[in-house]
Structures are given as C-alpha cells and as structure tokens.
Image (cartoon, rainbow, N blue to C red; front, side, top):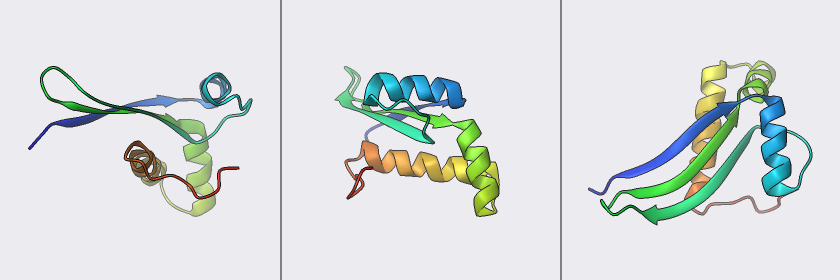
Length: 93
C-alpha cells in the first residue's frame, strides 16, 4: 500500500482571515481551508495537500450544533480531506 499524507494546521480567527484573504481574496475568516498538492515524493509517498482548521470557528460551531469541539474538528478534517480528493461543493458562495 502506498503512503499518503496531508498536513493539518490549527489556527485562530485572525490567522484564518489572513489566509482566506491571501489565497481566496475573501477578507473574512472561515472554518476550514484546504490546499491540494497531489504530488509524489521521490520515496513514493503521495502528498495530498494541506488542511488549515480554525479552532475558534470549530468551537463556536460545536456549541451551535450541540457536540464537542473535537467532533467538529474531526468533521472539518473529513470535509477538507474530501476537497483534497477532488470532491467540491456544488455551489460555492
């Protein structure tokens, strides 16, 4: 089985807003960003990409949805992994 990896970073609202503005030209924070790489290393490992999760947004959303912050971070990670594999929203507002 080939090795597959993705990096995950945890940031706050302010850091996420800066990333969202820089890479998506949207001057507000979001809950998660993903950056696809999809390249193999010389050792044969597939680098899917990078995931950035906003811990502040995850904590707020967890309260709103009635589950733990850990569950919300797990959901956001899974959501971003889908993006790294080419699955995207039908409508991106």
